[in-house]
Amino acid sequence: MAEADSKSTVLNGGSEEKEPGEDQHKEGDASGSREGQTQSSQDGPKETREASGDKPMPDVEGETGANQEGEEEEDTDSMDGSGLYSLTEDGERESEGGRRERAKEKDGGKRAARKRNRPGGGNNHSSSSDEDEDEEEDEEQKDEEDDDEAMEAWLGAELRDLRGPIWRAVPSLRSREIGRDSHQFVRRVCGARGLVQRLELQGRLERHTGCVNTLHFNPSGTRLASGSDDLRVVIWDWAIRRAELEFDSGHKSNVFQAKFLPHSGDSTLAMCARDGQIRVAELSATQRCKNTKRVAQHKGAAHKLALEPDSPCSFLSAGEDAVVFGIDLRLDRPANKLVVVKEGDKKVGLYTIFVNPAKTHHFAVGGRDQYVRIYDQRKINENDNNGVLKKFCPSHLVSSESKTNITCLVYSHDGTELLASYNDEDIYLFDSNHSDGADYRRRYKGHRNNATVKGVNFYGPCSEFVVSGSDCGHIYLWDKYSARIVQFMEGDRGGVVNCLEPHPHLPGMATSGLDHDIKLWAPTAETPTGLKGLKEVMKKNKRERDEDSMRHGDQYDTQLLWFLMRHMRNRRPPRARREGADADTDESWSSPDSSDEEEGGPDHVQCMSS
Image (tube, rainbow, N blue to C red):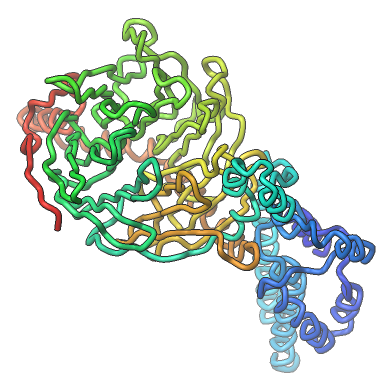
């Protein structure tokens, strides 16, 4: 048992050196529960101090002097100087073995009490039943230990060591004071791990009456646009937490995205929604919405828009009808169908689209299968590989029977990397310059993506981190290179965080989910995170995902049995024709032709600010 605890501690970033008092603790376990309790009370103050966020003492006494000498140059861009991965806060991690030992003593005390309470000279049947109970308890405890070890092994796979800090507070401030590299100061601060580990909630923006599905900062970072299930769009002066403009989007169903077009003076906002409409709002300099107009119509929900970095009048849209529209607001008919995404002859409904910021003629899409597809707008030939330039997919998902979808994908700041989030799976990083069919480079584990269309994003000016929401209501930040979790925050009382929008120039971000508010985060915590409660949440997420996988594994047999029974009971031709008609209705969204002239709401809506 002690050996298993030792392995867990080392994997979680602990030291292999024995903690002070460890031998005494073992002696207390051997002598009886009374001494064990005394030892645990002695350990209590240590756990309390570390859980409160105070900086832990060095593991080796010889390090104390070196740390004091270098205190002025101390690195704030690391996790308490350890540079290692931690699943729980230090106090929890170091007391893990003590808690298990105390639990064993408690169970042993219960078993002893049961034996003392047995009637004298009990029969063999009573004795054997007590022994069975003891064996069952031992098996349950062993199963729990095995689960912990399996969890540690699963999380520990494909991880790398954290790199050294790229930013040191004191030297950087000194350099800025004398004017050296001052133009790089903000960029380096925004990508500093020490500040990411100090992110905490700053405030909330409250105005919407439904789930907030989209957030987008304007290019200068002074305004924040949000869209919601209440069909309203709000423009915020987030710094003073005030809504500057609120207007009706003109959509008939949930607003999924609202984005400022670049170089438009914040006067043009592109929107898409569950009703399949792509609309554009014209905003005035007097904080009014002139009108919104429909520029395209998908036959199915439109979840995402993709902006071209330097264009104030053109962007792309993707819908569940498998169609990608190129939209140019300078044309009389703005929408141009670029491609219908297919795998073989089967259409693939789309959830996400993103334009490569370095090669703006390249765009990537993802949706109702496991493939990330990259297209080149200049040479899309649907007769040649369905127009696809190249495809990426994790190798273990290529032939997987599970119905894996891509809920969101994004390019890195320089377009060299592509991040994709899979439902009921993990987040994967691909090299966009690799050849067709290349496998992933990194894998980010721990969150849960099942209940909604979850977003994912890079964080930092050079895409140093990966950030995602989760069904558990928490926000996860991974170090991109090592794939280790460096920040873990509770982000939504409703239980799901969907949208994460880093500020374009400052160290902070905005998030939203099933709650009706928007949360603002900034690195103002006095001490780095201890990742409190992370291990328990990740174990729960992993268990739920495994249970879903088991259900999906049996789903084919269940559906086949259901189909055969239904077919045998319903052989009448009229019923068969009626069922065929219903099937056609269900698939009507995947019609190959999508037009902005179809019924989908009024083309123009006059709107006034609230």
